[in-house]
Each structure stands twice: as structure tokens, then as C-alpha cells.
Image 1 (cartoon, protein in one colour):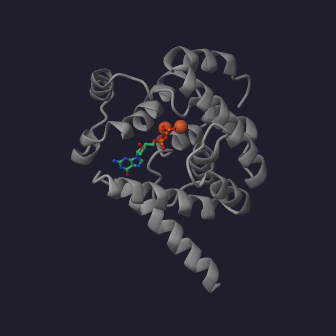
Image 2 (tube, protein in one colour):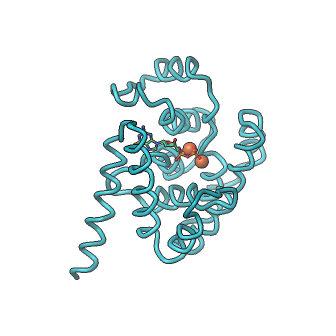
Image 3 (cartoon, helix red, strand yellow):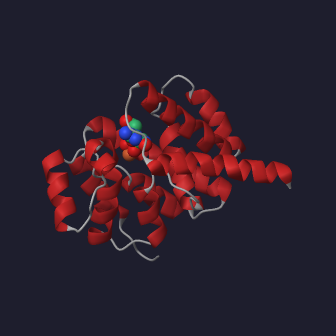
Amino acid sequence: MNEFDISILWADVRGRLSDFRFYHSQCVAEEAKKLAGRYGWDPALAYIAGAAHDIMKEQPREEALAFFEANGVSLTPLEKRCPKLWHAMAGEVYLRRHYPLPEEIYGAVRWHTTGRENMTLPEKILFVADFVSADRDYPGVEDMRVRAQQSLASAMEEGLRFTIEDLAKDCRPIHPDTLAAYNQVLIDEKERINV
Ligand code: DGI
Ligand code: FE
Ligand code: FE
């Protein structure tokens, strides 16, 4: 990819997010860049994905619904009930419309919240970067950071389990893609042990 002017994207992100979420986006961009260097994705692309990943996080709900309607995105009944999932879907559509970027960036943004079955390396890198970025301070983040250095699979497994447990405790629905991502990580690990 040549001559993508990231300052335009940063200004857009800045204009759409609160200070706190803008800082989070900066931290995820840095983290994604580091993980990309470690695990073999282009660090410059990872940085862009991190910068952009939450660009729609503060979009008002009514606007998000109108945006989906206008762009032919249909939500499942579960997705309609879970507005926290919308920013990843809206983010992908928004980026496709406004920024010519490599496909893998759109995919990484699209799947950064739920994950999915058979995730690509860029998708895994952004997913893990979002969990371990410098601004994160939840209990267990240090363990997640150690895991992220050991293997993406180990961090994904723990992150997905953490999300699923948290959602279940709060009686919130678990998206099938979240469950598929978790099951896939366990299946992949089993296969690695068996070979
Ligand atoms: O946008 P961030 O806050 O940086 O992080 P994120 O995109 O991973 O979003 C986290 C939120 O998404 C958190 O409140 C839990 C929610 N979430 C993730 N997976 C699922 C989910 N919510 C539901 N209901 N079901 C899921 O499978
Ligand atoms: Fe997010
Ligand atoms: Fe995030």
C-alpha cells in the first residue's frame, strides 16, 4: 500500500472519540504494531488497524441503525439486542467507504470485538492488541500481557474465556462468533498437542 496519509485517519478518529477512547486507540495502534513485528504481519498496517478499530465506538445508536439500513447491513436478533457489538460492524463499513485500505485491515476491524472461527493473523493481532494495550488495567491484564508474548493462541484463549465468563455472569447473550472463536482456539491447541 503506498502513501496512505495516516494523519487524516487520526484526525477523523480524534473528532469522533472522547479523550479516553482516543488514547485507547493510540495505545492499541502501538500494541498492534509491536505484535505484528513479533508475529509476522506488516507493522504499518497493524498500526492503521489499531488506530481505526474503535472509530465508530461512540456513534449514537439511532445513527448506527440508520447507517446499517443505508448500507444494507442486517442485524440478527441477538445483534439488535447488543449495541456494544455494533461499532465493529459499522467500523468496517465506514472504513471501506472512506479509506482505501488493504482488505485485511477491514477484516481485523470487523472481527475485533467478537472474534470468529478461523481468524486470520491480522484479526488475531488486533483482537489481542485490544486486550493488552498500555491503557488496559483490568485484573489479570499482566497475565494477558505475558500470554501475548508467548503466543497469540494463548492470549486469545484467555481473552475469549474472560469475555464469555463475564457475559454469562451478567446474563448477557454470547454471540455465536465469540463462541466459535473460543472453540476454534481450543481445537487448534488440541491439534498442536496431538501432532
Ligand atoms: O471497544 P472496546 O471496549 O475497546 O473493546 P471491544 O470491541 O472488545 O468491546 C468490548 C465489549 O463488547 C464488552 O462490553 C463486551 C462486548 N462483547 C464482546 N463479545 C460479546 C460482547 N457482548 C455480547 N453481548 N456478546 C458477545 O459475544
Ligand atoms: Fe472495540
Ligand atoms: Fe478497543
